[in-house]
Length: 303
Image: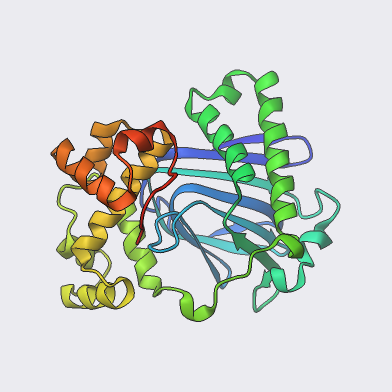
């Protein structure tokens, strides 16, 4: 992650790279801070003290970008457990806990903020709206397009700072109780193993040997256990799950403009563009070329 630093200890981090696992699994000590994390593409699971967080765009039945507003009021231990993405696109805006002089606004959201059992950590996680996504995508695209900000230390850094602050403001506004979407019931959440499986698939889309046996072995499951899990949780076989995740990744790459149709076919695991187009249209209701042009309007079912 490239981190840009500003007066007042404001930091804006931008990650846009291929990640196939956790580079440093060891825990690290972190100081009190307040932060916005926005996952645009990829999968990360991490722990702050005893509290575990999942930011993933590949969860079956609940895909898409995720935002996490996190306030850490005590010294804590941070440990990354899973990290995958081809590419992993993530933004992080970090400040001191009192940077905006309204820490109580973030820490005092009542039912809308969740709190760690031991105290000192509060958070809210949600699906960002179109306005937040547009700002975040602009930051990520400019960074990917040749480190716009790094090569323009004057004007470029001001652009990044203004976009980052506006994104942070939008996140604080989204945390207001009146605007907060209700959280799903506990019973509606999938088995945590499904997130592990989806994250592994996201990190190994280019592996020609990716299949049910490989997936089961990598995630510490027997093949029969994997089959039962997929059937019970997703009503599909492990092979169907892998194909669906590959197609989702291909759609995301086309929509972002980071792949052409031939490259998307490779991501989805198809050697024949014609077969890829048929499967793609059957799943999403649009052709790959139409998805590349813009939008998922009228797209069909998802896992």
